[in-house]
Length: 335
Image (cartoon, rainbow, N blue to C red; front, side, top):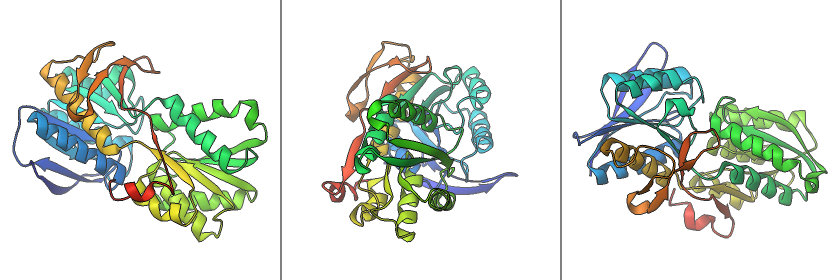
């Protein structure tokens, strides 16, 4: 198996931690994540490396120290200079990355966005976790059940420019228009920028600003674990309910102490695997990213490329999975 060797370098604006495979393969796949030190992103990287190994490709894993557009642009420029074969990116901004990714495409580099999309003009295809509408609706349905369909709720998101977060939130708002939620009120949306301390502080701020708050939806793995800790530290377990998207390994403690009754997620290892596999197939010319194409992705099975909500194309990983006290111990050591 190709091993990854961590390298640390400084630029004028950031610190970037990245890993490079031990030997070159047929193609070089560069993965650019939102930021390093994010467990979800690290898990996606493990899956991507697995797919590269199966296909005989080299793998580079990079991300800015904090989830900024500027950091990702600098990394992409470096990957273009390295003449990689493909870039897999989870975007910190839907539109701002398009020019540099178009530059990459102009240099015959395939571009696959995953997790958080870039605009269709900056990619060949998007690899989506699941149907965005379903992700948004499930979280509203869960928090509604927890608070008895009555009371104030808030959303603690990641970054205000992150495509996936904003799309899910729009579907949450649409779901809340259903008459069955008439006694519920979305009072605010705050952003923790996928940073633990900031997410924790934003949650604490919600408790102070909205003393009657009954529930929080946090559709981000960093945000939901930080919010669960804030609920616990503030002595609000059982008083403020919590759901969202989380990693079982990080949420087991909070499920057991009651800070979070249930949450959702897909397997980030599988997501990274599929994105990397799709990149490899693009490089081999097996697919082009066009609507209706069918392909096989190793252990993940068969897929058909479909139309995305943004007008581009995508491959859907599958529906999210619900975690709660009945199954959390089965999954906490998996990812």
